[in-house]
Image (cartoon, rainbow, N blue to C red; front, side, top):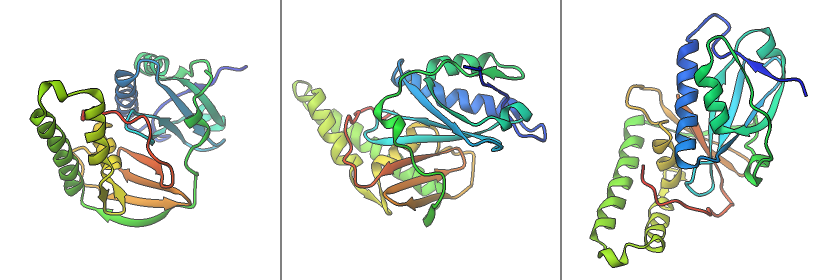
Length: 230
């Protein structure tokens, strides 16, 4: 199979270093939570952007980051692969002008069920500061209630149950789970004023910010919830 080589950045010579740094930060979070993490990569031929999909340990959510690619070779090739997040992080971190994608790996079940490319309908728009506040309040409540538990009751099962209660709370058409995931993934930064948008397409709901999106299938119960409030 012919190796796929990508160059990051916009075709006008835009911020290549910034694109690489943002992608590396996203991959770094996934690897920090799970050293064996994988990402699904997807783009259409002629499309100057690469969709990078990850599965953080927040129970049933998908993290989505769109990364600009440039150059005839990068844009011309359609990409559809599942690769090691750690290997991709190493390739991106070492890249100057471009890098080859790591070899494909056998993907987990979630990698075969991605949100649709199109058909999204905007249902709400939020002030980013309010969303950040909601995420911070949920994390603060988790920590406070954890500290209230006697040490002998601070078990994994008890913490998972507490997280399940908090993250399942509704929030403006979605759930605190989605808001918390966006916070933990670095998608709710304090250095931008772009609105946070809620979109729907079929069974999917997606919280989109200027730095990435968190998508969830509404009819799917969350499983494998992590209690990490990071």
